[in-house]
Length: 416
Image: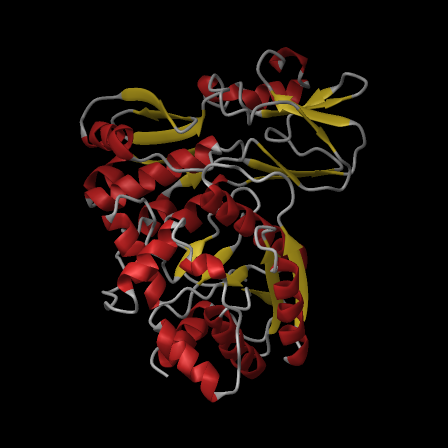
């Protein structure tokens, strides 16, 4: 089968062997995902890995529950662990496809994290790349599927990566291979429903066309690895390194640094990002905000941290903490507490109430960044900032550095 060698090579290159962590497989029961599941099962058996099969029912098709049962039966026949996931709640009238995609990624991420998986295998093919190109030609912003990317959903997808090993394989070849093995698959009628842009692109192509090389995305991994992260969530680097980088590399790094320092869910694009890149290349010192991040530059350094005055996104809203449950606050910090009855909010306006040792540590934080630091408030009124000093009974982790390296392509294979 054309593309099989490339698929196995991608699995060999990106995944670790003989580790107890499971590999998650997104399985719809369609031909592409069935071929992926069979190939991944063979690879996993040869390399000492366990697969977890995840099927999402979006609740949009009358046959959805039956499809889940079919997927469960396939996983059982193959001797694989299976979990059904369901998108519940009210569905939007506008942007349904995008909402369903985000819901699917969130469900897959939650289930994968709970199982200890760090990689989710997905069955996109060369045909998906051709269709995405056609959709972009028609004005859509559909990205080119790539072999290896961090999960696009935040914060559920933190620490998770997507691997698409079938991007060199054609859909028709996969189906011919499945038929030769006596396999059958589910055909989702949405794939031919003209109400959806992807279905229209698929119909227009009707199997024709050939994919070009996978679109090159400027890697900013080198810049991310030179970036220094602080315990309080800030990022800094030498301005000269970014100024001298290729413009595409610098733009990707700047977008990712703003995204990660600001805790946002979508990176900045377009004219505002280009203005920031131009300012970095200049000789002028400057201060600006972008994607919830404050960016400050002098002649030598470039710093990124959360803009405390940017409250429109709502991430700085106070939040009650549940004991032993890991939560992400403001998209920037993961916190797990064993202390009951805690609330987290931004530090602004309460610095004078901190313990003396924490007030001293606060002096080392740039003044504009202090107001957005996390503050833990006990029911008795006591306060502490876990970004300034360890707090007994609280596990605290700043996420910006790991997220930045993943977003910039510095992490090239399954984390250990």
